[in-house]
Length: 371
Image 1 (cartoon, rainbow, N blue to C red):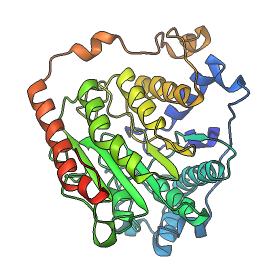
Image 2: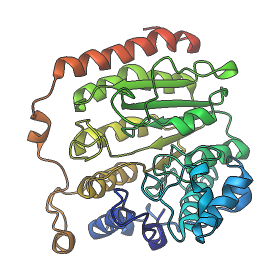
Image 3: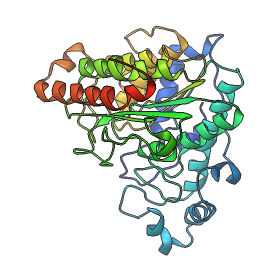
Image 4: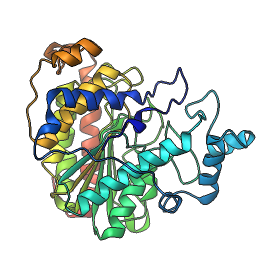
């Protein structure tokens, strides 16, 4: 999913979320010639309608975002999680930009469900924190929830949502907390050390959804190998047992070792290996979304590598000369030595193993799994 319109909304000049990152991904893939393949295509998004947004968000919230986007009623902004100085500033055209991101995920969901594509990647989506009536964590509309609701409405019986952003996927978890049709799984830096402060293993769902919310908090410094073990020992068995109709992934790259906001240590290879592991579990319908990611080099390189995994192609490590000249990036993958930096490995392994153990104890029996 791509349109230049997805890249143009500036939240605030000093804001760490820079929509231009999407253009860097698109142009890198274009430089590699990926879109010239007969099995690859670029689909333009559309703006989500108010009715589509209201499948999750309240009418008053949507109308307020519209007003704020026009510069009106700004005295009410704090009521809905906006502020001039905080994570969620108001900007002109904010409503249209957020509705376009949501519309992109809706088009992606429809394309996957209708068989137009086996996998669609909306790097401009993955806004997983927004609630029904408030903005939160850079997120205005929760496109992930809206897209999953569309999949359910189209006939999906079971949807699995895997969130590998460094931040807990709280908004999506909360939306489906009482549902057994959507299995939400979040791997994230522990809420004890990172926003939004949630995502403990004891957050398991409620009512009919007990056992369908899964959380795997990780220690600062978590690296490729520990991350891989968590995926293999906790996530993969649950997905296989759940047997979803659709795989939905949120692929935030703020887990990268160079990200300025977080403290995990995944390299480009570690992140893309995780995406490949998840993709191998797809039932043939895979909706992939972006998410966090605040180091522009990591975003461009890793999401391009993610798309290459989805398209089944291997990209050369040397970045095409045209892109090098424009952006100065020369090498696609991180130097392997990047994963050898000193860290508290004992704590990393202890907390990763503890998270897996707790999920195996609390969640596995609900799904008829044994260790």
